[in-house]
Every structure is written in C-alpha cells, then in structure tokens.
Amino acid sequence: MTTPSRWVLYQGRSRLPDAASPDLRGRSHRIAADVLLRSALDEGVLIAHGDRNAGYAVRVEGGQLVHDYVHAGTHSVARSTIPVPVGRTVRLEARIRRIGEGGAVRLLVDGLDAGGGHIPALARARTGYTGVDVGCDRGLTVGGYPPPARFSGVLRHLEIEAADDQWLDEAAVLEIEGSTG
Image (cartoon, rainbow, N blue to C red; front, top):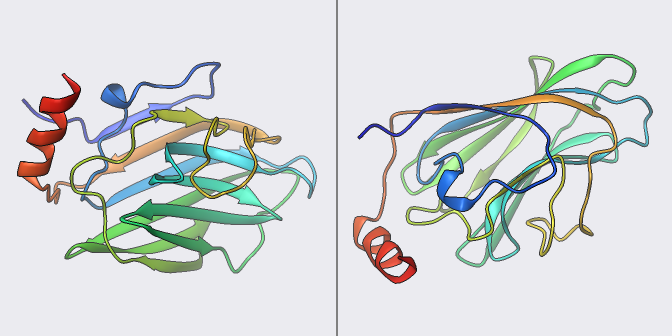
C-alpha cells in the first residue's frame, strides 16, 4: 500500500483524526497556505498536529510566519524575518528537509526566503495523538500559545506535500500500533 504524498485541507469545524492525518513522520515535507490578513492584528494557527508533548504547527503571530515542532522533549521554533503582507492573498510556506534524524526548516512568504531553523530530531514513530486542526489548535497547543488560537484572517486552503525519504523507527511504530488497536 502506498502512503499518499499530497493532501489539500480546508478549515472546518472538526479535527481530522490522527489515523487520517497527513503522514509527515521522519520525512521531508512542505506545508503551504494561501491566506489573507485583513489587518496587522490577524493571527492564529493555520495547521496543528499533536500537542505540547509532540507535534507541529504553522501559524501567524505578530505579523510573522512561525513553525513550531515538538519532539523528544525539545520545542524548536522558526520565525520569519520578513512580515506577512496585509491586504492581499499571500502564500506562506514551511519547508522541512530531513537531514539524518533531524531537519532544516525554511520559511517562505510569497516565494521569498523568510528565514528558517533546525529541528534536532524528527518524529519517526508517531507525530501526536490528537489529530490535525486546520485554522486553530484545540486543547494543549503545540507552541504553548493559548487555545484555540483560531486564525482570524482568511485561510483559503492548505497544501501538504511529503517527500519519498521517510525514515521510520519500525519497532516503535509496531509497538504503538499494537497498543492502540
């Protein structure tokens, strides 16, 4: 069975269950969102998978694109060095390139390099247990921001693409699957 490598998600009222969520474990991937900030005060979560213990989030905060990643007790944050434009639809992207066990984060605002960061270790067995929220982050948020962190701008849609370089911890995956049914 082949794992899907491309997903298009839209903001909705319910959370996408973990079992149906995009599989980004231990692989390079790209998350892109077409958004409109109507004012400089618009912010919130575009996508979140997991919680404060394990997961990732892409969000807008204080006019900046932000990528949060939590795994193995480490919270990595990358913030854009250029602001997200207000008053027109823009494409925001977080690109993660797997390098060994970790990853390099590259942020783009309308195709312009907007900074990046480093993730010491990518999840290789499970991303999180709470599923995916689009346009908010309910519960124990990935980045420690207050829930539900609803995106107050306009989120047209999200595109997620995953590379074919997935590296899983097969023993841990089997143990998790066996314990969760």
